[in-house]
Image 1 (cartoon, one colour):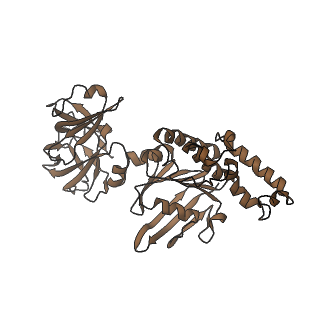
Image 2 (cartoon, helix red, strand yellow; image 1 turned 180 degrees about the vertical axis):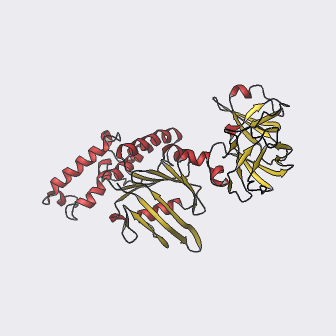
Length: 402
């Protein structure tokens, strides 16, 4: 297996920049996912690593060697496409054997009839068949080797595409949204299969998706891309808990994180008409910014009855129930808060939401928030206070850095 390094990649199509100084490293044996909205450049980056596109500037290294001048077949990578790219007139066995046949058989040995009689052809084809059968078994494809793609389900076709990539044991697997054509149930099952496949092979995987669930559940690390740049590269839980920018916080997480506009007044922050007992961005004798964007995950809210007082280190929002979404194990309560354009969404246990009526006054309480400046960059020094202005009593360990 091999590590992959991309350094300072730039790519434009005409006057439109697609990649802007992208640099990242994929460790040997790591599963790294490139995630982001459509058009952010993740597929272009994958194609450049594969050698299917060429960068305007920058370099790609595989196993420590620059491969920018090498054609795709000499980079020892295998790519699984969104559309499977199976040959409809070939059987599963023939589709999976094709990469080995192109590498191990001469042009004469590949001829349909005469090739099988060519010297050395029988032994070479037997070795290829053995490798195909060994690869097909763990993928559950052994009973399907004689079928053609039209006789397979979408999930089976995807496994054939994976098997064709696996059969020649490449240094790096590149996958471009391989699950996007599957239904939700099959996508979940195939997600698990790919993750188990990575663990069993110990290979280097670079996976492209716009689905944050795939990125969070399958990856060792996630590179979140937007506008042709990597905004953050970290472990999935770190990206969720510790986003570097507001755009990252908003992209990762379902339901979407709540963003509240706050202003500094009277030594604290005010969210609408509510005084929040926290200080943001202050230090070394300097006050924090006048305007702050506070972000609160839906599961960080707790429901309180209308008029309930704040506990030490707790911030409150008062509003009215605008909508409910019962999801069985949890309920999403949409609360319209004065001064906030969009309703605030709280994820609460069903028992807390039971009996709530549309228009009913409620109070939301939280002990945790992420803070960002007006440009969406993270402000990490968030300190919660109780009733005493300078007595730090809220948050784990007093000062809360989130």
